[in-house]
Each structure stands twice: as structure tokens, then as C-alpha cells.
Image 1 (cartoon, rainbow, N blue to C red):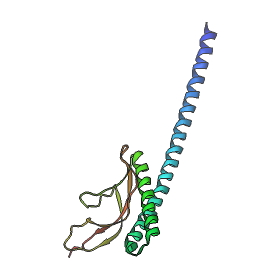
Image 2: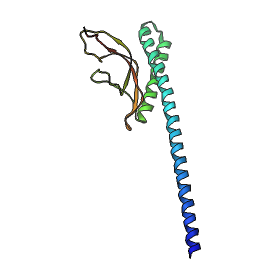
Image 3: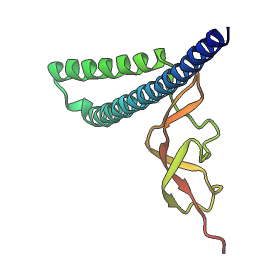
Image 4: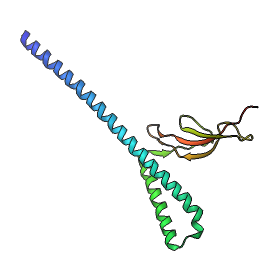
Length: 153
């Protein structure tokens, strides 16, 4: 009877060790997956930045386009919209600032300017859009913004 208890105790300990090892391995695999996923999103955001710059350039010169160039511009915009829809389907959305004020958890201030008629931390322009997972409330990339910073006189 004692031998059986010792045998079962040994098996129980072996199972607990195996469970702990597998749990640790699973946690490690989940972290690696999340890191790869975030890296993929960051690369997609760079592509979105390129599309936004291209759209800006196209909009500025659109009056001079011929029919073929208009079609090309429309196709570029269509691809851009498809990429945005694909991200939205995965709950990845562009960070917005409805009150037009910088919130440090959502943005990084890359430059400041004086504007006496405006309150400090008012966003003057967004240099790069930020993105977050709206379902998990996780910021994937902070927006880069230019804000007001008035010197106190």
C-alpha cells in the first residue's frame, strides 16, 4: 500500500511538473505571437502612412490628371480603403482626438508651437496617425502630433 501511494505521489508530482512546463511554454508562445502580431500591425501602419502621403500628393495635383491617371488615383484610394476596412474588421482603429487636445496615453508630441489664442496642449496637426485595438483598449502606435505650448510671460 505504501509503495502504491509513493508511486502515485511520484506520478502526481511528475504531472504537476509537466503541467507547469506546458503552461510556461504556452505563455511564451502567446507572447511571441502577440509580438509578431504587433510587429505586423506596425508594418501595416507604415503602409497606411505611405498611402496617406500618396493621397495627399494626388489630391494636390488631381486637377492636372488625364483619364488614366484619374483611374490610377481611384485605384490607389480603393486599396487604401480596403486596408482600413481589413484593420477595422480586426478592431484596429485610428485614434481620434474629438476635443482636439493631446492625451499622452494616445499621442507623442513631436513639436510645439506658440499660439497665444489657443490653450496649451491643443493639437495643431497630426504628423502620423495613431492606432489602437478598440476591443482590447490597447494602443498599438501612438499618434505623433504638434501641439500648442505658450511660454508663460
